[in-house]
Length: 226
Length: 226
Image (cartoon, rainbow over the protein chains, first blue to last red):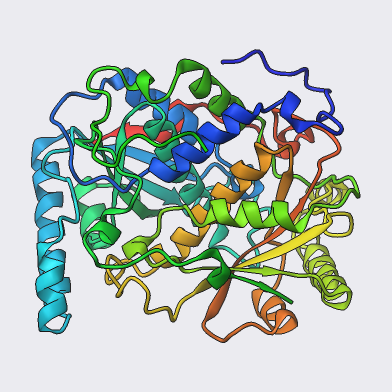
């Protein structure tokens, strides 16, 4: 940890690079460009210490009303891990069947999870019943509670990538079946099921782009004035 | 931009620090610790070029099925900005009235948005009708489309902070009223309304913690095994 600036310090008035040098900004962009949704893991162990470090970082994420609604479930039981893989395979087969013939073959040829190989399964939930934060900021947009958990997941993802670790977000799951399998409190809503481990390869282009499923669109597509 | 490693490169097999030096990891942690939900802005202009750079970075975020459902609306019209402030003030007053007396006074004393001062208003939507990504990964958890937009917002937030810029996420808004005010397509769901500008001060502790609204809880609270 770099020695923090004193609590009362002002942002460098005209030169923010005093706080964040150009090299850091370039490396941050590099991190964003090379972060992938990982499905190809080596079998090497991820230590408990390292996993805890990732979760420590995730807890630095912003949350609505400082509600910190993230709940991390490290799935260590072999039987539970197997049942999650079964749930994924059932839903993945069902999803493939919904596409027209050619697209369905294309879909079936994609590898959409590394659940079998990944040394770490981490399920991430949102505690929708939490009193932490006293409901501030979520009366008209209660979904911001789950969005806070997404910010934590994305933070963990970047912290992992900065350590050479890959993260894959598996969403082809029945959330109710996952909750039942993991025996979690009724107020906890599944937000993501993550595979974490050492990736086999590094790529700056998403796998779905390399496999011709979907191209990246230019920024102009996404930005309008009003 | 640092020269990227060749597309086919393997992750540094036993030493990920080849890709990401220790100093970068320390600075990244520093960035995460000092990123705040900002409500106190200086009036200095944020250039169009800089805003575009932030949106470029945001578009590097992960998205389900590579669907890239983020839509950014730069609110430049003074009348529209004023109407958004009115919507916030109405909802903020309504929220204050729901707390018991002492908590309500505490709430009313908090500054919960920098909408008046922030040079940039950026509304962020999710295009729920998009065909991009061919629905991959969101049959059983369609909410992952909005979660992808949240990842883009969080990416923009970090890219902004690395440039000394502050971002405040305003959620005390009626999403329907915002959509109407901004005249956006019917399929676009509001995910966040952001204030962007140069912050007056830097803090490593969230404002809601400094103002005794809610403390930060330890990581142990959030991590369990199953």
